Image (cartoon, rainbow, N blue to C red; front, side, top):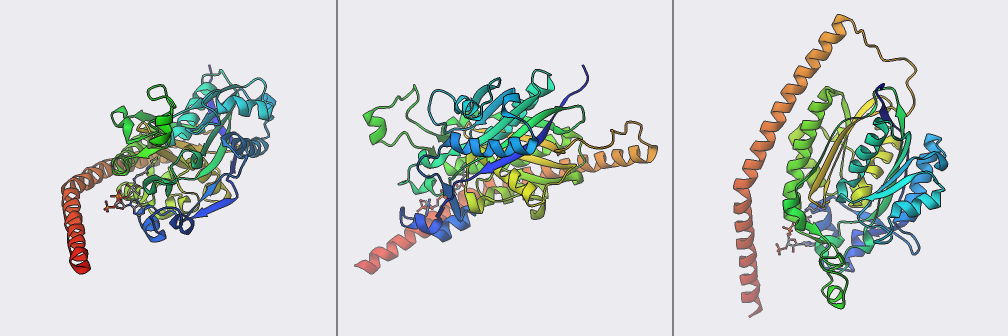
Amino acid sequence: MAERYARITGWGMYVPSRVLTNHDLEQMVDTSDEWIVTRTGIRERRIVAEGETTVTMSLAASRQALAQARVLPADLDLIIIATSTPDYLCPSASSILQHALGARKAAAFDLVAGCSGFVYGLVTASQFIQTGLYERALVVGAETLSAGVDWTDRDTCILFGDGAGAVVLQASPYPTGILAAELGSDGADWDALMVPGGGCANPFSQGVLERREHYLRMDGRRVFKFATHIMSESVRRVVSQSGVPWEEIELVIPHQANARIIELAMRRLGLPPEKVMVNLERYGNTSAASIALALCEAVEEGRLRPDDHVVLVGFGAGLTWATAVVHWQPAEPEGILVVDWPVRERLAQQAAYLRTAAWNARVAVSTRASEAAMAVLLPFYTWSGRRRKKKTERRTTTDSR
Ligand code: COA
């Protein structure tokens, strides 16, 4: 069978119009705009209005993506919604979306991989197209996290927001779409980010509600450490595997969880800020929607152009991660691929591969070195922080006497 690829041909996004700023949060929990901005980079997030849900936002984003791709819903073969906040525990949000779109012949299922879900979905749908089973697929990342966070818990409620992003994939004979990918999970840390109640291990009950176990709980430090490590390591592996010379990666779109995580991981990769898409200051962490929203805005802002290579990298509950190197070519190219390159081009490509191998080794060394430095310094920072806190407490007690 001739090789097939899955081209991204359409994209669309939807965010609710209601804005919740850090200043609004100051009125709800014991926090400050300054704390949130310095620790996370987030300034505001969007929150659904009454009647808006994961499915209604997915519908709006999907209609845009389908119009862009000039694909009729009735021609879709597959719909995947990556989400951890579906409208109902059963049935899937994807089946409800399928009905709302009128995509009668499409298979539909939800995919739960936390904030890595959109890239997991993209890789999954691409596989169905590349094997020849399907021609057209719709992948959505959508979340209504405002319904899943505890608005009295300042550790989590300041981080999250609502939204949806969608892409259409179509079969293509040209090498485009996902060129290399890695999907991963480290279940050892499954309890670092979880909803403790409402599943069959701890079904809904009065006790679950009273203990507020139906809301998201997070061990922020554990997630932070995992995220910075996995983002740099996985991107390094997947770019090398893709064969795309490192300098030909025009943009990286990381999961929009925390500006500090992104900064640290990108520094390890030696990437300048202009090559990294960040929009979390306006939307917060929208989990499975975040990379899809950032992708749409990158295209709209002209930061992602035809024939560019973009790296998508996500991490989240599980703990999972997902990375993909994507060739961005929404329209069929006019020429055909040149197979018989002249010697000069072939030599230039070999040189680019060598440069990528050197970059790969440098990133591996710098990641190990910065992790070793963190392991040494973290206990010291924790100890000195506690000492400073105790001193302040002692001073306050003495002053108040
Ligand atoms: N406002 C003010 N203070 C807050 C606060 C808030 N919203 N949330 C926590 N604090 C306090 C803590 O109680 C703690 O106080 P203490 O020193 O008196 O005990 C202090 O701030 C420091 O807390 P800590 O948890 O050490 O902060 P941090 O620097 O690790 O930042 C996160 C916290 C959550 C921002 C950070 O750990 C993080 O981003 N982790 C990754 C989370 C993530 O990305 N999750 C989604 C994954 S998909």
